View (cartoon, rainbow, N blue to C red):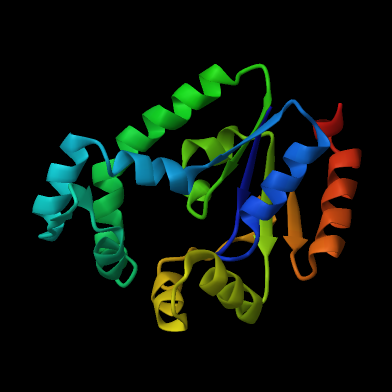
Length: 191
């Protein structure tokens, strides 16, 4: 079984995915942002990104902050980055799906609706939260400024709620857990 979870930055995607993993030992969670970070370590990808975005290496690594300054402010640049990295990311995700084919797999990513995994998913979940809550969470989680969060926000998608099986309003953690548990209990996940 495949479940996708998406939502804007700081909405609580990983929080909900991680909570679901506590409800069933057969559930595994892949945060695709982490796959994106791994792909930036591949030499072929590094050289393409350095050339495409005129970046320098920092300790033989892509400066993700400098790259973010470029791509989060410009949808075209974000697409260029995706064009360079997606085939590598997709291969890693596919490998993970094969490795865990006997489990319930949660894929968590802001851009998941733009992928084949969204259409292949058994359950699609959208997580929503107020802008103020999201910015506060991101500042604490990512150690960034509100200005950097607002730049990142420019790269977010507009989500069509009608394309999701469940929409979760994530305001208070304990209330969100109750909502997620209800979804778990009444859906095919718990069977």
